[in-house]
Length: 249
Ligand SMILES: NC(=O)c1ccc[n+]([C@@H]2O[C@H](COP(=O)([O-])OP(=O)(O)OC[C@H]3O[C@@H](n4cnc5c(N)ncnc54)[C@H](OP(=O)(O)O)[C@@H]3O)[C@@H](O)[C@H]2O)c1
Image (tube, rainbow, N blue to C red; front, side, top):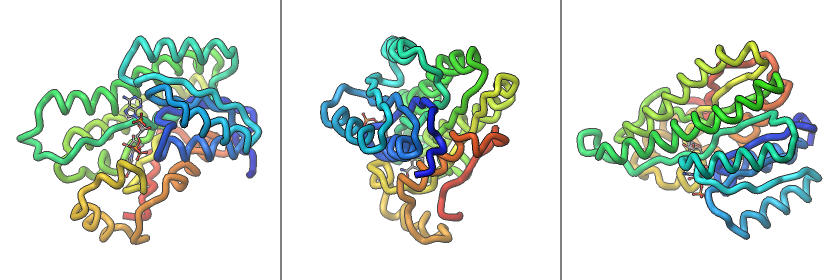
């Protein structure tokens, strides 16, 4: 442990599993206090967060809301504000990838739902949290996009497009927020060993892995470590960046 996040308070979505949970662990290990956001009230999750907090001697406050539900999200913001602490970091992790369907056969409703979760929910939460960061004159926002947003991916038009929107949004907000000392960066993971990674079609996985220089999938903690660095003051001169964590493609 190097404590690169000691004294910082971070909001992390998608905390229950996968990359989000790994980010909670990495941040706690580096000394951050965390509002760990999950979709539904869940005793196992609360216990898990308590264990991570005790192990690392930090505070973790579980918060429950569906990122697409503005009422729930506003209540979550109220709850965060009620602590009367600075909000130094926001990590937008929660996201969905739908099953692969050809572009021409994909229903518009399905496309809109993917954008609701992967783009509009991130936008909504960022808007609320950035208001707090602007008032305190500082912060770091990290968005989890995907290499799909940079390179495209077969038969997941709406996933790739929603992740590309996040890349553009990151660049834009980096410019808008620089005068307020708020840095905005983005991580574009390759294929990572999570539930979402396991859903990738075997043929596609083999195809992607054949292009990965390191010839293996990534681990959630390998994405989490980069997030911890970006959130820390060690990355104080980095904003508007898209960092690929993909084993080299
Ligand atoms: N795994 C990969 O290969 C990969 C590659 C590139 C990018 N990414 C990106 O990394 C992020 C995390 O993915 P992962 O691999 O960790 O996926 P995962 O294991 O499927 O976890 C997704 C997380 O997002 C949460 N979530 C989804 N919809 C939500 C909603 N409406 N409200 C609140 N929470 C919601 C889930 O909550 P529940 O637990 O309640 O379902 C879960 O915690 C995503 O944005 C994904 O696009 C993943």
